[in-house]
Image (cartoon, rainbow, N blue to C red):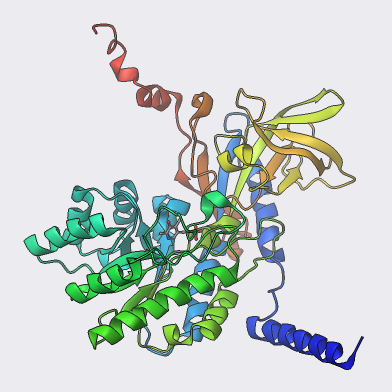
Length: 475
Ligand SMILES: *Cc1c(COP(=O)(O)O)cnc(C)c1O
């Protein structure tokens, strides 16, 4: 090795050290959260939250959700200039449950909504219009009219939508801040279906397409009431550096527009969500703080106090605080493979069942009393209840041997999983409960509260046209 090579290597190492110092060490792994989870599972079995008549339930760790919200706020408070207006709007899509939205609201978090249903959920949770943002690529005129009447922030997705907003803004005054969503086209991540900033993504105005940038600039110069700019370069599978590059592109565009306008027309940048989640262990990595520090390093002007900030995190706020708990109904052997037949399958883990390579989930084994099972593992399939062969949450997974009456916990499922029911086989939506440790003077036991009751069979019939039995006979 020549001297020069050595010097190169040293500077590489320096750079790595520097980055580590800047980003901070990964936090100590979530041992406390794992402990709370074990206690909650034991209590769920003891208290009958899961049992023969309720073989499947979603569980939310309330303390974990509160801590996550606090960590998000602290991360941006640390890097933003004092006095910077910051709205963290939770992407309702990730966990569309009113009590969860309410808990987040109490913790100072707003809502990002993308459909009339999500807006209704945010309103039911009591989230004020000033803390609500409407995105979505296909808003109807009625949706836009409602949002503008309520004063909810609106991000227009494309020129045709902006034309609709033009007409509405002219016909009635609105308090809504309005922006345009741009796609910085910085490239995709590991999961094609979740990459929003590819060249051909369906979201926003594609900034690098011919003429698009100039169109966006003119759109702002012609409309003094356009005061925001939005981008969301997520999601799971997109590296932090790529997300940061997307934000940097939006920031540069805002600077250009404001320079050409000769005033600070764009006063708020909405940087979207998309922070990936570690599904491989209890460690929370990357952290909000790491992302915020990277933004501060790469896009310092974003945080120097000249711009208000909106974020739209979903998965990273909720995934690790949700656990799906299922009873093992039967265990059988087929072709030399042990198969545990559980109640957690495609109806509550749709992505994992249909795209297992992209969405592997950790599974933990508990005995009939809800105690963690240990001991040497053997390869087993963990199957769901649906009637198709691919309904498996894990194939040949090393787990302590499962027996009838045991439980499996499917971890990190607080976002985009058990709250996202898929009605295959008319399987009932499971109950969802929040849990927290009770007061110490009462022994500190785990207390549960129902977020959503298990769907009743009569409800399944009613939602399946039960009230219209003869609808087709007279045609
Ligand atoms: C889905 C979505 C989010 C949230 O993405 P996560 O990966 O859950 O953080 C934020 N903003 C927009 C516009 C989205 O579509």
